[in-house]
Structures are given as structure tokens and as C-alpha cells.
Length: 51
Image (cartoon, rainbow, N blue to C red; front, side):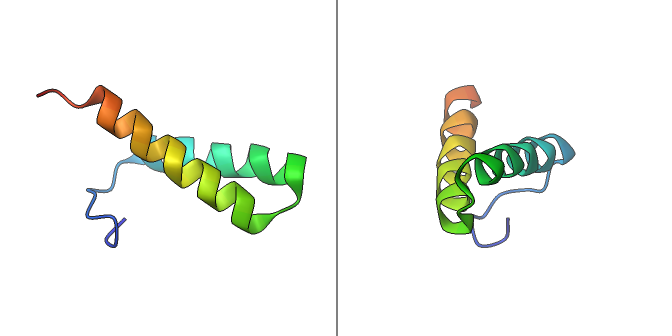
């Protein structure tokens, strides 16, 4: 989260871990699961940001 310059949130961590687990069990690929969930988390944060 430091690299992404994001403040830690229990909700974000839980969603990201759940995403990773589900994706990894379907694809058995660490890299694919990591990439997909990083993108989804980023999109969700950008979408939910109040401007």
C-alpha cells in the first residue's frame, strides 16, 4: 500500500485478499491474480472517490 501511496484500510485489504484468493483458485496463477486484483482495487477506489 505504501508503493501505491494509499492509506491502509481494513475494507480495502479484505476486498483485495478476497479477490486474489478467488482469482488464484480459478487460474492458479499468482501473477494473473495479482494483476487483476490490483487493477480492480484501483478502479474501485477511483470510482468511489469524491471529487
